[in-house]
Length: 66
Image (tube, rainbow, N blue to C red; front, side, top):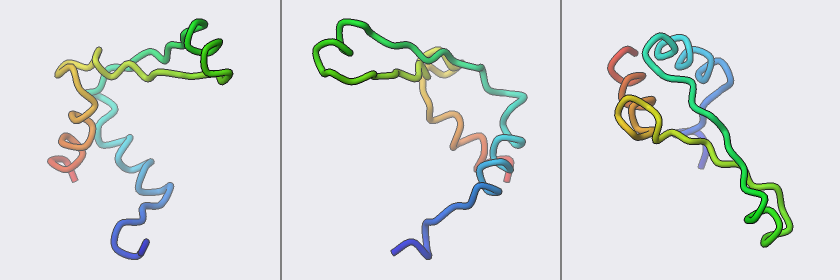
């Protein structure tokens, strides 16, 4: 199952190097109300603050630069 789609940590590092100069660092936020309602610590990665308003720029840019 994994043979076709598995990625390694080295793949992730390479992708990071490919896109890091064009990607905004986006905040990770939490909500005390949602944490209390769920009984868990929830974290939200705010990719809407990317230039395109979406996380998809990461994959698209990496594909173009690879």
